[in-house]
Amino acid sequence: MVRVSTPNTPDTPGTPNGRGDGSGANGSGSAGPADPEASARTQLQDDDDALGALGYRPELKRTLGNFHTFAAGISYISILTGTFQLFYFGVSFGGPAYWWSWPMVFAGQLMVALCFCELAARYPVAGSVYNWAKNMGGPHIGWLGGWMMMTATMVTLSAVALAYQITLPQIDSRFQFIGDGSGKYDAAGNAVLLGSVLILFSTTVNAFGVKLMARINSAGVFIELIAAVALIIFLAVHITRGPGTVLTDTQGHGTGETLGYFGAFLTASLASAYVMYGFDTASSLGEESHNPRRNAPRAILRALVASFMIGGLILLFALLAVPNLADKRLATDGLQFVVLDTLGSTIGEIFLWCVVIAITVCVLAVQAAGIRLMFAMARDNNLPAGSVLARVSPRFHTPVVPAMLIGVVGVVILVININQPQIFSVITSIAIIMIYVAYLLVTAPMLVKRLRGRWEPVQGSFTLGRFGLPVNIIAVFWGAAMSLNLAWPRAAVYNATGPQHWYLRWGAFLFVGIVAFGGFAYYWFVQRHKTGVLAEHRVQVSDPTSPGEPPPTTPTK
Image (cartoon, rainbow, N blue to C red; front, side, top):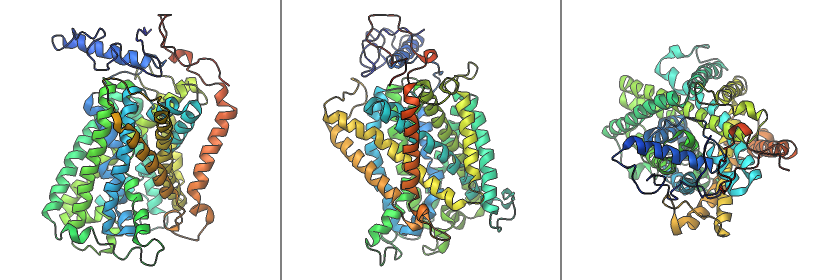
């Protein structure tokens, strides 16, 4: 039983000393450096009290430190996975000058991340986007945001797992287990096989507890960062042209279009938009992290900034180093071709193995985030069979059923790719849109709170101060604009091959609409009458005078 002695309410949670600085329950600092064990115990109690103020009792084991939370955020973004998987897309639609979309997307996502940092400091709880949307916009907005994010995460898991097929057969043809790769469905079938093995591995690791996942993930991220920096150095040594040539080369894209190159650039920018998201994962593990009020905001920013800097340099030096900038294989085989062609097969394959590691830990992070999101919604009885989905294994200290369910759904989604790769590409593109919309369902209600004067960050924690309002406005504008850009019915994106079908070109609006309205209809007519923190997950308030009352535990209508 957790004793809630904090004077903070669920709307303004904080540590017992009201500062969130971990200086001790009485604020005196007596459990400071002279007694590290006592200080650690005090910090752990502070973290649990902050969770208790939100109405939840601690069930997940706090084992994650600074680097673990940073690694979770950066592995979801996954520099090597995203750049190697989507470089070809950017070049094929925007030419080398598409590189400018990288800093553009970073600037917009940075505004979103800064808003998330304030929320991470205030609500250190699992299922970040769901709980942030719920606390900013109310239970209905919260459910919709969580539903969109959860659906998108399961599709994203499958999409990332498919990246094995892009890389492993290029390392060694023996990884092409189905056919020789020349058959109509050889690549798609092999992609499903490799992806299913990866998802099975990820599900097993995540089910065995966050500590095992964090160790593998942190080791993988360490290797990924070292490899990324080394790749930049190797490419820099092979530079054959200056940036002035590359960054202005459009290769004729946009000629004859209504918007000219700007229209082509907006399409090419999807390659960058598809990469720089998922930084909120660092906060989604808040209930398993030490001092999440302090560490989560830092991890979010560090993950995004590191991804921007390292990823941007990889893309730039790849364009500067490739022997022939007009080679058609840039738009088909992508960054894998650049590495092998520029660095040679031996060194190139070493880097491609590092890409395989990056893909592996990316899948681990995506599934870990999805598990915490499903657990958070189920704990509030906002999903069918909530008590089963929210059950925490006493042995592994993690929700095992969500891990297994997300893994099964991920494999089922993969199977669609065998005979319908075009439909699968549409679904995966739409999944990214739903994540951007879910982010918008956090930043927009947050902006409303700011305009009404009802937003107050936790004192002593991360705050934007007077810059909060302009940053929030830009974040909302960016989220709406990029969501529209992602969903725009481009034939080249949503109906690239085969006969043209209106339902594929408008697939983003149709699919997002079906998921949003269909899911919300279920919530409105069925689930909202049952919502409320399940008794076994509710904090037990031992002090009847404590104002920190938990959320309702009886059905609300």
